[in-house]
Image 1 (tube, each protein chain N blue to C red):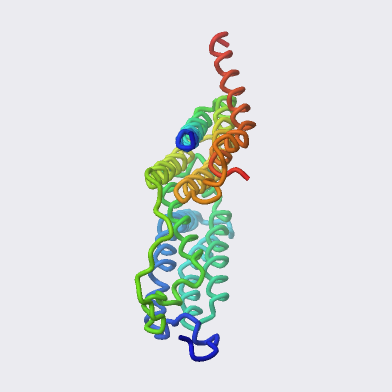
Image 2 (cartoon, each protein chain N blue to C red):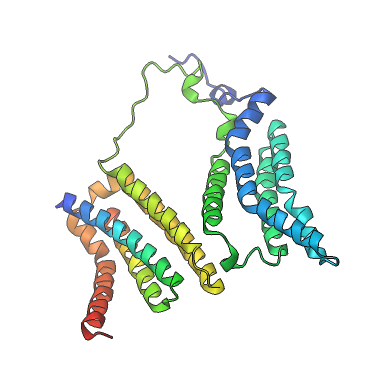
Length: 261
Length: 56
């Protein structure tokens, strides 16, 4: 029984106080994925800009500027790590997200050939896209690195282990795996579009489709109460417009095939 | 019946994935009309899948 009013500090999660532990916790998600993304995407651009600048007698200043800016992303990461140690979360996030991404984007924009779709190597594009997704996830977990697990806190006093409220339905992981594989295939294919304008459009559409597929498959994986409350008729009625439009498109394709046009 | 609608929803999700892949592939082959068609089919299949899954 609780003998008195529980103060806010008693409810607050335990913090990782050691600077070494903080850096280690920070390093695992954000620093490593950041360095990976830098080495896959920005470093080759930086090396290319440096090679061109050194081979030309009168290299344009923007190439030298690209070399300077392109070398800074690791510094932004280190600064973010420093802000983390100082417990300045907002500053760390600003440095790690906006500073890092700004320097990366500026390097690409300053290099005259870096953003030409036909020149992007598909494997590097794919690894870079996956790397940036992981980097976003590393920063997306709000303050997770600052806390220990609540159940590890001796003050939590949990008598029994926490049980999940619901089990995942059968096939949930399969649907998610298929969606993730499809999203990967989409990205890989989009970087094979060599035409410059179509390449940009293809990569944008692939990113949009990949995010939509993964988010819908995640909904499939955790589907629960709201779906169970609706009758199958209600669900079919709700989807009828989209299914009707889909049927129209398929019918149009069949007519086109039948007419041989 | 509810199980059938669940399966239909999953099939539509897979159809959307396949349509998106074919659409981006068609874009790479410079077949813009087919690409637009496949992307529209993918979008509608995804919308239908979501509507079947979680009606409001």
